[in-house]
Length: 295
Image (cartoon, rainbow, N blue to C red):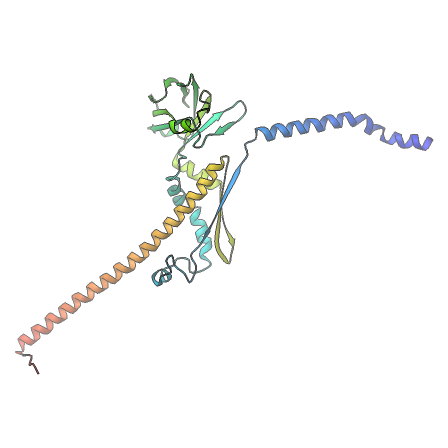
């Protein structure tokens, strides 16, 4: 009996501390639940591009075989860097509507409304300091808007009106196409929009972009993009893939045009030389009174 009491005495601190441990576990679960509830999830879209084969051009033609830029496996690394280059990213962004990012602002976090905003923003900035900084927007009564510029000025206006401020011109218009599809979409709310500069937007895309070879011996590239908006993630990957292919085809035709121009120039040069030779031959016959005899 005494041994049993002694053994139970060992666990007595655990019994006394159990409520505290339970309380800590409950608090930790609650914090984790709140974190997951308010943390913005990230989505990743992936596409794969097969590089041109060593023995096969774009159209299986001999001309493309001779001028194929992917003739060796060591070109794979170069194509990876090309896909992540600012030049190609800039061309890609011309296909996408990412210049102005619009957010719905909540009490704790904000949500980007990529192609899902109840209004669209058009802007012409004369002062570069207003790029890459947030403009606050409050919509009330379905049509009244108040814009707070980064410099702190509050401007009241209406939808579809031109707003002039110290940094340029802004116009906020109702997104009729989206509201026709989603008539229940909430309009009255707090918003924020950022007019991205080209440099910052390119840097943002590159920072969330991952391009790698599937295998060093297999000419296949994997393109992945991470975004808080699933549709934006898919659009960036698809647009980048299309831009890369267009650029590749342009290089192909440019190589073919260069070759054709070279051959045409050579033919023209030899034609001129042949004409000079014919003229010299004819002049020689005239000077030496040489007459052709028909046999």
